[in-house]
Length: 96
Image (cartoon, rainbow, N blue to C red; front, side, top):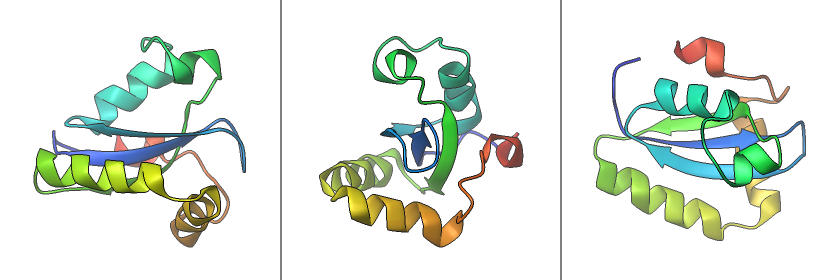
């Protein structure tokens, strides 16, 4: 996967702690999360499993989508994940 704006959701486990982020390089950013290179929430709560992502044409649209998703109720986020990843598999290997 080439550099391209993307919004992503990480989880600690199925129905666990969720983290929503945005990046211009999804592979690099998820690798950083998985290897605890990113200080903060994901490192502190072991949120390293890529369970959902969405590629965008521009960074502006990715940022806007991230902001909207962060306002969603947890129930809606779980439904979004399960609509494309019902088994909560780690999708990292599908993007490298």
